[in-house]
Image 1 (cartoon, one colour):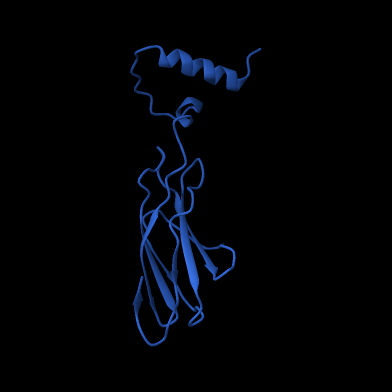
Image 2 (image 1 turned 90 degrees about the vertical axis):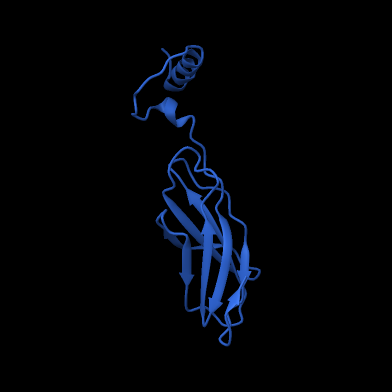
Length: 137
């Protein structure tokens, strides 16, 4: 008796040695073998005003072969650990974080998620909210 994993491996070997074109758009186990986690998004800007921070990012260079399901926003304070502060739909490319402590240092990073899993963390940005000015990082 052959198990499912062995069957998929055999199927891939057979399909890689034939020159065929199928029009089947249904997902199969063999289809998922070509999907990878997405590359990380890139934080492009961060702005602070009052006790708010707005973080902007660009989408991943590669979605890994599957559409992005969500963006996961992480925040930590200086010397702290990252915590999830929000999960956003894939058509969002900015996040407003409010009610922050003035003159405290906040760090942000973002991950993209597709059906296979989460990307690595994006680049990190840090910003210090201030009442008296607008800062652009």
